[in-house]
Length: 318
Image (cartoon, rainbow, N blue to C red; front, side, top):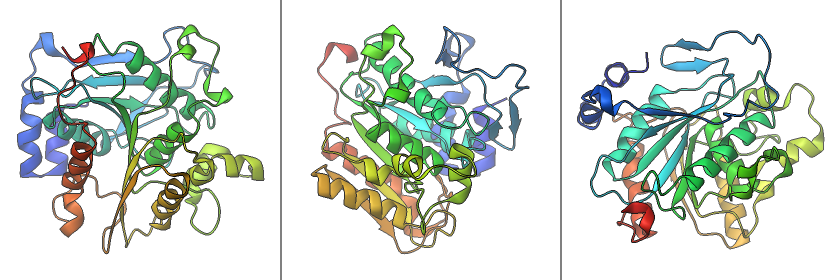
């Protein structure tokens, strides 16, 4: 249902066809590994929540959060892993455009990708935060098994998925992100963040109202709004970040990325911001958007400069 061939056709990009080809050719023995986040039972699971819905490359009504592993296509790999959070306003997940296709790009860099299917408006906060922090803990706990360096685990998110990635980088020690399971002892702090047209603030005038309402409800408290405004939660412990935003984004104003960048600067956290003059919301990997279409090159350069695309020497990458 989520085949790479369909994703390739939907994007209609020749460059993506080259990236996706190795994945379409997987043998039955090489099928993608789907990892349940909550094998012990989803916390706060909604009984009779109905079936998951897939339509036009998007998933909604998620009740069973998972990670899907896309191993690095380049051998030897870098040992770097990225958990990918598709966007969709906490209402749905753009799983093909901002999940599978992005995993193919990361694979081409020698990076292992884990596409996160997280819970949405049916649950609200803190379910998505719990899901992304559990994802980081699982990848770090099992890093050697997947030939990953446990000190090279990043989170990349788009739009509302960018908000989730940013909260993973700011609320990784949050009490509401723990369930009391043994795995809670594993650090959930990402080692780096990549945020693409991210929702950051839930405060006027730059908030994306749909994401805020879907995550926090119609009338959230001021305290909750501030806690989930990621720029207000940045500390010196927030991981380094690279941000990408288009100046003509009419859905999530580019001020969201600027706010987070400035907060990182104030906290002394290494940060890079690519704010393009033009660029709509939701461009993904589209090759026909002008200079902003080269954002993947800029992110790869940033990762290279941070040593994330060089083979690691740790035992987890052997």
